[in-house]
Image (cartoon, rainbow, N blue to C red):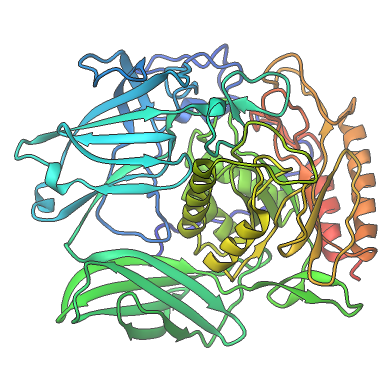
Length: 614
């Protein structure tokens, strides 16, 4: 296989009854002896907490849609300290922090807050392999929240603003002839005292819908060697109607005689080969054209090689899914969301992506994959990734396991506006939001699982909605846009989306917009010994798992009716897991218990996908 990983698929629908994970160890806290590191105090560990290896956390390749064979993972124990915001570079450090877990998390080993008046500092040393001599060295950060400054051997190599997007610096000129090099990183994060996109993070979470903040490095840090000219990015656009895949390979520092060789494989068989020119799109015929969908998430493997006069300069592997998302009319003339030119009802949970031990960072790749596998086992075919952007491997697993993703842009705001108007934002705020929105789209452009971009949620920081929708459509005409999920619809985009709690309702489809129920449900069932704290809440409290299932069935009976009249195309149930003080998840926050009989839950969700067709 030319993919980064081989996927081992298990039977996803054979777990009967209420899922209860039995621990083979006893937890009284998150602490355990482990040399220089142990988790900080944690009110609710997960079963992956003790599996985190401080010597090799998150070892998986972090950029699965553009894989190079040669790389070094810099995750692990780093020196850290927290100083006043304007203090000079520290000489002494306070202790060790486990990268890539955020400062506030148990798994960082620190479990502290920073705040808008302080700056978090990191330091570590690294050694380059001798075979990297003469290469350009790229230092990658998958995500750091929020303002990041980076030095190598006391030379500043770059600064970045943004909490959710991957970025990198060429550090070659800052390297010395010494065996060991020193990497220093400084991070300032104003959280809810600032105007930057931050999702649901707050400095002091309470009993509401906002949660513990994330400060600093929260995704993988890594390095790779490249030549002076190398493949910088690839852009994939499937066209199932013409059975073609458009590939644009972006090259850094190209020369006139550079060329590309592109091979496409399906299940190890070569199905297409083409020569191309860097930075120019090429259309490749895919005769077999196996279509990607949740029921059949088939993918093509790609091998792209960059040559100069016959000499190989660079080679990357990737994958692509042949799928189409669009609007269309059904036989009754109702505007519908179409997948591969057919109406497929899209049903999924709201997924906030918080973890009791890692906050924004799942404890392991296996833990993150578990959430996606469980969504499929529950009978869903979609999810809404709520005001957070996940590591790129999250979307890799959605691609491989077959989950449609409605991707929110993390909100940035100080006050919730009037529900009928956009907010008035400063030029600085608007510029930063647009920059981070563009980076989110560009860095996730190739994932077939993503079918909808959602720039605003419930009016939080919403501004210039028509302009933002046009911007997204210009950046990515291949996907749908939800102008505002809930509340502040500005009558643009591809869908009309409402939120209604607890019971579902449906907006009426329009001539050019499909109907989406972007949030509903929120049935709160508290499972003793599996909560973040004693005080919890849900939009509607239920007393037992049987009552939960009964009401869930009733709600989806209403959804089945709305699917026919007025013509609902998609529904999002709140939510996949409990989150801190919210107990309205289908699973407990520690992912230890699924609150309803799994087969019964799956039957309800799958029935809405295959029955009551309009």
